[in-house]
Image (tube, rainbow over all chains, first blue to last red; front, side):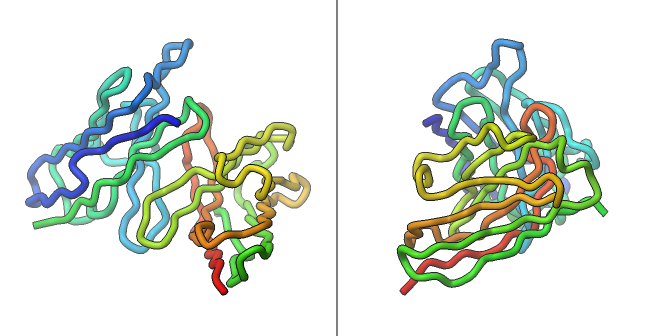
Amino acid sequence: DVVMTQTPLSLSVTPGQPASISCKSSQSLLHSDGKTFLYWYLQKPGQSPQLLIYEVSSRFSGVPDRFSGSGSGTDFTLTISRVEAEDVGVYYCMQGIHLPWTFGQGTNVEIK
Amino acid sequence: EVQLVESGGALVQPGGSLRLSCAASGFTFSTCWMSWVRQAPGKGLEWVANINTDGSQKYYVDSVKGRFTISRDNAKNSLFMEMNSLRAEDTAVYYCVRLGYRGYMGLWGRGTTATVSS
């Protein structure tokens, strides 16, 4: 199985400051069609997960532009340009090219 | 309203069975691949299974192969998960998820809880 490794596992951020989360996969997530099947999800406290980013860097509908994704191959990053209080929760990366689809362990983001 | 509503979670003894259901509304269910994702208490997310639009293709995580069966009824806009030979490690919140183009999990239900314990 493809192992998704996130760092850090916990992050405490001052509102208005940037934050970034790294995600590394044990195999390349690049498809033969040139697309890369790496997604980012946020699970806010007490809620179901929600999609933030698909195919490395495409923001899902309604996701604020302070969220951005980057990377290629096996190394990926989620960046929040200016963290807001509503961004607290657990962030997960996920790969959707190799079965079984697998998630990272999650990164817990809290506000200072 | 576009939504997914799960039901069927319950407390069941090890070795028992459960049937989870997911009612879809507000979109054309029959054109969407669907998934089940679970989350054990205090743990992260785990993909469990996918099903294609007409139910002819099904994929499972190894830990549930031979015990769980994903299915759908497009006439009733419903997704199911038949869970047999349940183990304590199957205890989790089970989310019904709509897959978008390119496989992203764009719509999630609120989840239903299956607890396996004696």
